[in-house]
Structures are given as structure tokens and as C-alpha cells.
Length: 342
Image 1 (cartoon, rainbow, N blue to C red):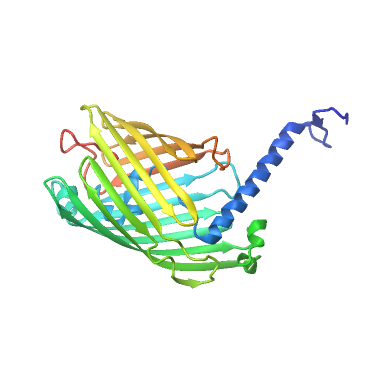
Image 2 (image 1 turned 90 degrees about the horizontal axis):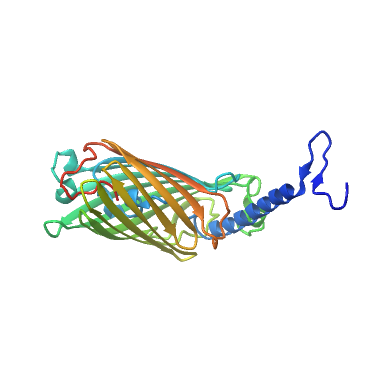
């Protein structure tokens, strides 16, 4: 091979560009380094679950918002850093029942008093597989003709499974995780979530705490050092500008002791009560483009997310699909100024 040649001859194969080999090697090195960092964060607490369409899953973050949009079935699938082996994958399913809506109330979001919910989440990130179950209850107090104060509580059960054959070099060198190399281990945690929210048909403001007990009730192998409390603020505003156009904007903030603050927002435009398009930004991490459709009984949405130039994340994109199915009511305006999405 010539010294300045740009190709490597391999037996029985076509010549392969050196630049392509270097690019593939760099890609592999970056993935290993990121998984090492990700694994180190996991040992301290838990993986952070991102949902770009967070405005459609308010009750997962705040039990006080259970039943805020009536009785529904919800779900999403999120494939993060597409194209990389071992990249995080998340699936979520939930069901919410508003008792006032079940009884046929004309405006259950305002008149109802009680709602219950069940959330189920599956998350896979590197050597860890996590299954979470949250049962929530919300009670509402009517403050004015258009405002409610919502209080909620939830009980969470989390099972974390560690595959000791898939750990990174950094995790294998960890004093705690090194005991589980080559085997499989499970850890179970029971904890509590609390939340309150001020709601109106056009806006909401909420505050919640996840893992109030810090993961102190646990069983199985102890390969995680507690689960720090999460503090979560959500807010949103929506308005119908005409019979064919409405806008919605949402804000999300999350703080946790062992991780950087998570701040994100999105803006959407809804056309003819059927099609929405929009975008969002997660500060210092990613941007996204959103689109969705509203049908009589359900909504579907899609997100294409890509990291910002300053983000330490991989260059791969993230895709997220979601669906919301109404159990009793149709997606139609009950008031001329009502907006059908958040």
C-alpha cells in the first residue's frame, strides 16, 4: 500500500476508504465514553427519562393532574440516539379515570372531584432495565367559576435489573457494581409522589415532588445509592385565535440533586382542530420538531429530536411516537374558545 493512499485493500473485498474507518472508530469511541458517563450517573441515582411531548403526559409528572383531560388511555415510545447499540429506549402506558365524566357530567374538568390513574413505564439504558409502576389519585377543590385547585398523591414501585455481562469498563471498575460482573441482579424500590396544581381551561400551573422518601424503602441487591427527590414545575397556556386556529405553549422544569437542571418548553399551532405542528427546546441539550393529528376519539403525535451543537450527547437523532385515546368524550369543542390540545 502506498504511504499516501486513501484506501486499504482487504482480501476478497473492495478497497475501504480510510476516512470511513476513522469515522466509524470515532463513533465507537464516543459511544463508549458517553455510556461510561451515563453509567456513572446511574450509579448515583437513576436514569433521567425525557419526554419531548411532556404536555400530553402531565399526570405522569404530577399526580394532581390525574384526569385533567378526562378519562383516557395514553402511551408513547421513545428511541433515543437512533442507530447506536445500547442507546436508551423507553415505553410508557397509562390509564386515567375521571369519576364525574363516567357519570356523564357536562364539564368534568371543572365540576369533577376525584380521579385515579395507573402509569407503567419500561426503560432500557445500557446494562440497566427499569420497570416502573405508579398508582395515583387526585382530588379537586373548586375555587371560582373557572378555577380548580388539584391535589394528588401517588405510590410508585420500581424494579431495576442489572445485566452484569453488559457493563461498561467504568461500571466494572466501580466499587459497588464490580460485585455483579457476569451475573444478573434486581433491586426493588417503593416510594411516593406528591403534587398540586391550579387549573383553568386555558392555563395551568403545577408543582410536584417525585421519590419523596429518597428510595429508602428497597429490597433485593443494593447497587444504587438512593434515589434523590425530584422537584418538578409545569405550566401551560392555550388559546383559540379563531375557529380554525389555536395555539398552545408549555413549560417544564425539573431539579434533582445529582443531575443538572432540566428546562424545556414547546409551542404548537392547531389548525381546524385536526392538525398541529410545532417545536420545542431542551436547554443545553436538544431541539425538536413536532406534528400530530386529532381524530374523533384519539390523538397521535410524532417528534423528531436532534441535539444542540453544545450538547455532550451523541449526534444521533431521537424519535418519539405518542397516542392518546379518549374513553368517553369526543375530541370536539364544547365551548367556542376551547382548545383540544396542550
